Amino acid sequence: MRDPHDVLRDFDLDPGVVHLDHGAYGALPRVVARAWQDVRVEVETNPARFLRAEVLPRIARVRDQLTCSLGIERGSAALVRNVSEGLSTVLASLDLCAGDEVLVSDHGYGSVGLALRGHCDRIGARLVTVHFDVGADDSVVVDAFAGAVNTRTRLVVVDQITSPTAAVLPVAQVSKAVRAAHPSGEVTVAIDGAHVPGTLPTDIESLGADAWVGNLHKWMFTPRGCALLWVAERWRESIRPLVLSWEIDEEFPICFDRPGTADYTGWLAAPAGLDYWSALGGWDQTERNAVLVQTGQDVLAQALGTSLDGLHANPAPTMRLVRLPEGAFTDEAGAVAFYERLSFEHRMEVAPVWFSGSCYLRIAAQAYNTPSDYERLAEVLRSAPEVLPSAVGEMSA
Image 1 (cartoon, helix red, strand yellow):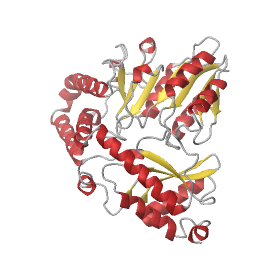
Image 2 (image 1 turned 60 degrees about the vertical axis):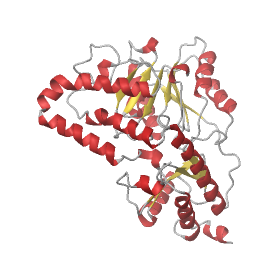
Image 3 (image 1 turned 180 degrees about the vertical axis):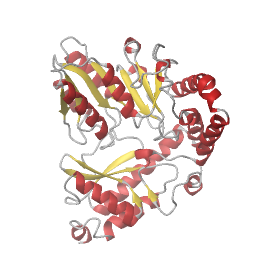
Image 4 (image 1 turned 120 degrees about the horizontal axis):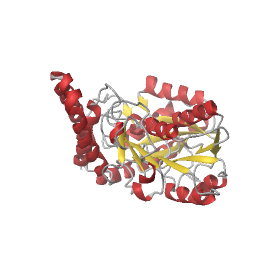
């Protein structure tokens, strides 16, 4: 196990900032940045030859390496830029009609919900959002999805690790239940696995879904713009990339490999991120991160005088929620302002969350974090009235 201060020097992260939101956009190690730059230089020495004759076999080799790293069969996953693109691809490949329904939960990622709503609005379909409380038992989650299925349900999107509420959902049970609830069983299930690679060992092919997509830049240290879209064999003939280009007549996943003239260097440098993840400790480091983020959650809850009761029994391995005192903010705009005060005035990177009428902080842990990072955040929250103006008196009493 390396010293966290030593690990921090592997990154270009500002050492004067407390970085407790690795799950948002990840962070790029310098060794991966150098590998990325090496590929850029290689491309620019002869861009015509590289992009005409070399890029496709290189992408295919990297794609195979990345899919194997997630324990899935070669040829079963395509490279895409992120989960939003992957799920938009699934949506565009479905022949949805007016009156059809798409099912999501209110624990889903905001931009995915917006994409689904926009598509449904354009064609006259209906977006149905199910609700379950923070800390809901798995059976409640499964029943919420299954109970909203009817003959019009065509697509169900479920998060394996929820972004706003940092919970692991029982996606395999949801997949099974929604098919059982559908009169014909013919419903497409897509899993948002944005936070899964590098944090949650998963047998993707056993989840019972039609599609699964996960980001590699969040927890596996690849350049941003690297994600994998896995598709069940029964669905591979019907799914097509959003950008139709030279490989459109090829089978899945080759048809995704070259969406026109683009910068593919991030994809080609992605194995360097996986190598760094492994060298840092791989799953052993993930377990250490889980212990650390639990410590951070305890420190902050004690400092704020808020309870951990009723939070998720199955939280994300490397992220946690902490309740904020009532009135810290009262809507989504207030959460944004709260973030800006912490970031710009106090040099704290953490994710405020407004969910179902309550306010939280979502914290994360990575190998460069220490318990003192959470203690520093706790001190800011306790001592800075401009951060928690409505609650500071109660905390100080």
